Image 1 (cartoon, one colour):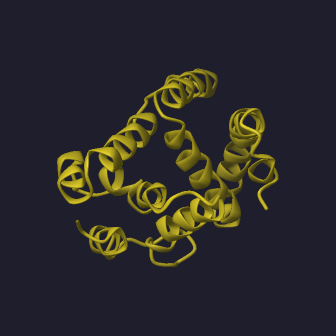
Image 2 (cartoon, rainbow, N blue to C red):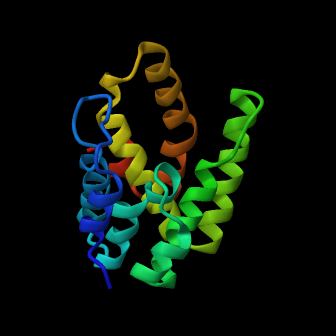
Length: 160
């Protein structure tokens, strides 16, 4: 089995976040948030790999070969949520909410990784343009915070 940090670093090499930091800081932070939840190490793997299929040429088959079917299932579930297309912001929120509820019913870990991803994105929101900051913050308040609250993950709701 490959090391997820090495694999994530390799496929995200050269990518940069709006902050100017290497993109790898994002998956490492997401994995750290998951580790803070005292989750077992395999739950951190999808945190490290959550954007690989979505943002690189890596395929879900390559994730499966390198990290096993469980990690591939979680990464695939995260990718499917991210690839939804929408006509309006309201439709987007409704469809994401439905997809996340479906993901939650198939495996709660998908939702936990998505919440950890959102927390890190909120922590670095200041690097987004003002209109994106407002949009992301509103979506977080209306969609992600209530989901975290329903799961009893209140520290995620307040972003500590």
